Length: 140
Figure 1 (cartoon, rainbow, N blue to C red):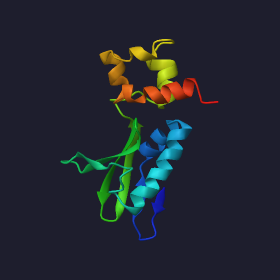
Figure 2: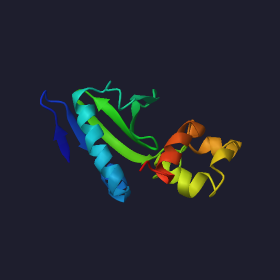
Figure 3: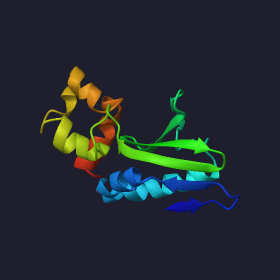
Figure 4: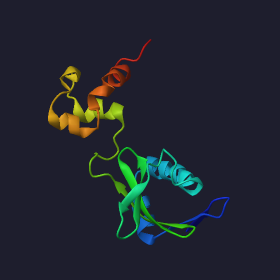
């Protein structure tokens, strides 16, 4: 499958990429399509945070969400999309409110967000305390 930008830059999806994308959650699929638009316009778009992943093989990595990445090569005016997967540093399908309510902080212990394991769950976890409070107790 090919996608093309207005200035002729193309994206080609490998069969592995299509398979991996199809098995990703629907929200990730939608987020990827948005990010693909950014990629076709400008590989340096800040939302992508694109970087060389494997210099020797010419593989690049770009962000879909906090916890999902896609990998591609650049060959002339064509981006070949290799795979999409969850980032190994972050749990999959986590959005900050869900993290606080269901996975990271046991009920009633929001103030105890201090253990190393909790801190590793999401970078800067304790900075989201106010967000968690707002989700749990929205203003009237």
